[in-house]
Image (cartoon, rainbow, N blue to C red):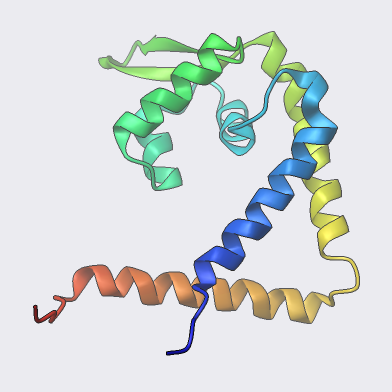
Amino acid sequence: MKIVEPISRKLIRLGKLYLSELEKVTNHLDINQYYYVLTLICYHDGKLTQTALADMLGKDKSAMVSIIDNLSENGFVFREVNPADRREHLLRVTEKARDAVPEIVGAFEDMNNTMTQNISADDMAVFYNVLLQMQQNLNSMQTQPHNITI
């Protein structure tokens, strides 16, 4: 029997390495996870609900609540009742987040440039297209019945 490494393991290793290096350059910002979530909230400051953010990121609502709670406990975001619909809460950033997000975005840019050096723009376009096709292939599996015999 041949051992086959799932593609997902390669992507997870790459993601862990990326986040490990990102954490080194942002450790003075008092944040060690949810960097991208924070940048999205900051970009949409006061115009984004938890539900909309969860949909945008493909996260379930309970996971999103935990993420927002973490960012809130660390002083980066807060919830504000939506005046147009009191059942909803809009996500707002604090001054601490406004100061941190430009550094986080700069760190993303530096990391992306470092990890893609010596890779042509054409190769990166192919890479992104392949990732998108893989995602579409897996998404289509979710809508198809599985014929598993036990």
